[in-house]
Amino acid sequence: MLKYIKKSLALSAVVKTKMATDETQRLEWLKERLKSRFGAPFGVYMTGIPLAISTILSIFSYAMPQASVWMLLFRWLELPEYKVLMGLFLAAVVYCVVIISTMLLTARGSLVGFKLHLAVITLTGIIAIFYFISAWFSLLSGSVNNYTPQITSVLGLVFFILNIMWMNSPVFFRSIALTLHNRVWRKQLKTEAQHIIGGKG
Image (tube, rainbow, N blue to C red; front, side, top):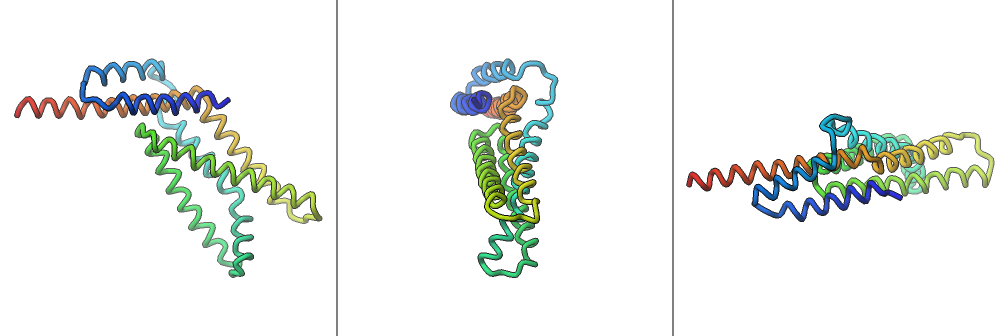
């Protein structure tokens, strides 16, 4: 279960450790090993699309419960309900900034960024699960005229499950291996440039 997500995390951790060197030959060896992980130089994983799909699915999963959550929050705080849209908009902006930031960090081969990306998606999933339980419990416990919460709760859970399945796929694992390869490559180029400058000095 979650085989490829665990492999992606383990590979990121190993690469982070092995990158702590200024030997260009060791970096070249590490780069070649990573090439064997993502295989053929053609495929969807070469485009950054896998990370973008994960981010979009996360945003969709997050968006589903927001109207109900903010309506409940405003009623509890006894705030005017016409301001709900303002809360929705601000929360959406903050969430998008956070999830896109973690996506960009992951795309740069950052282990911390990848862990944060997973953490945000996990938190989104927990919210989706609680919303699903709450929506269907309210349906069972009394008469309901509006089935929007039930529909959106199912959609939010479906988007979350699809995201986990997507991140636990070989394609996503290859895209992570590619981001790590590119990070090692950048380190190698920087190290070689420093050696050249040091040699001239």
